[in-house]
Amino acid sequence: MKLAAAIAAGLLALAAASAAFAHAEPSRATPGDGAVLNEPPTEIVLVMTQDMARQAGANDIKVFDAAGNEVTREAAVIDPNDRRRLSVALPADLAPGEYVVRWTTLSADDGDTASGELRFRYDPAAAPSPGREVLQESLLGGTRRRGRPRRRCRGASRAERGGCSRRPSGR
Ligand SMILES: [Cu+2]
Image 1 (cartoon, rainbow, N blue to C red):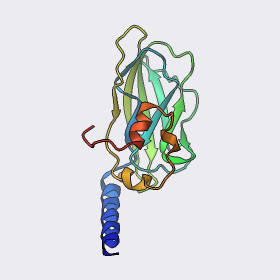
Image 2: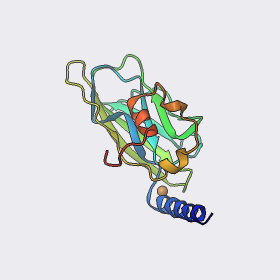
Image 3: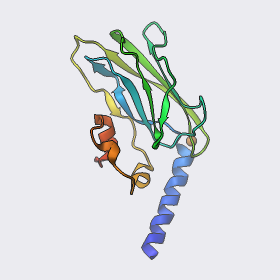
Image 4: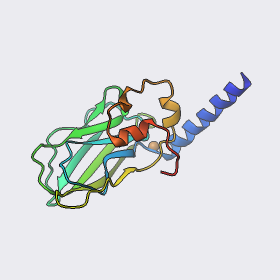
């Protein structure tokens, strides 16, 4: 009983600290930042550090080619079962080249907006590299995921499995 209260207090403190210092920023990215891919990616998936507010247009991912032209043709969507997971489909005819992934979010936790960009390269001839798939650890990820069904882990991409399994924090 006493221990449970102490744990609850600790989680509240952690939640407060997280709300004060963090926004809904990518903790995991697929493809990873700086990835070199031999096959064109079919979608961009970002898992955020905080829940996103379900508000039209507030959360989005736009992908631009090296000339600055947007290649994404639809708006990003928040996973109906996971308010931290934002994804957008990429056109099947993506040309080889460098791409910039610009994301923007509205946090459901504290109402803060955030934005940033990641990069990947699609080059059929280059040595492939996964890039940085883990961008930062989610402060609340461990507590929020407890007790949730884990079906997202099954058959999911590498980055998503990383989000489900418990890895040492060094990664
Ligand atoms: Cu914030």
